[in-house]
Image (cartoon, rainbow over the protein chains, first blue to last red):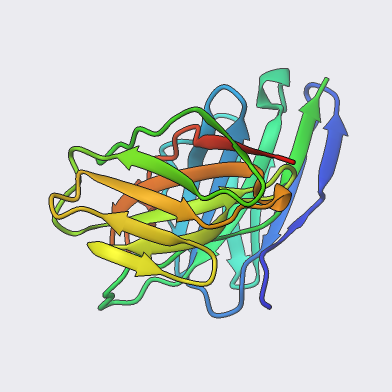
Length: 118
Length: 111
């Protein structure tokens, strides 16, 4: 059963440090999403890639966050410098969008990176 | 953008049928209704999707009335392992980036 893989599962860091989260989407999927989940806000979309091109990063604080897909098997989310308010669980999800689609392709999520910034 | 409303929490007992209703008054013609399940320390997992009437799979059933302004996820004979948060989302085909995730319904199944 194909899965989205995220590393690390947990990360504790001090304010001001750089944090890099990695995601391996499911092979063959052409869309990748980064979400942030907190108790208060729920799931928030940070970035969206289609065929490795960033199409939407409007949900991401541009001054400190960056998302990239250096190749089809790797997506990264970086925070520099990190702040305590960035503490959350970060999820990566992938999906397959077809040019002519008769249904809404479901998203496949990884198990997230729990980030704690002290 | 279509927004959904669902109960914050629900309680049930093992063996019972659980129905979670979701309201989506401004659903668009091209929108599908999708439900996800999330366990603690895991990412959401797709359960079921539908456009109209009734859809059934090995996990759940989804009932959608003719006006499509609401939908009901039905979980038959729940067990303790069905304790999770359930999300209802609406969105058009191929446009998952427009999905709005609310806080979901936290279902607690008791022994």
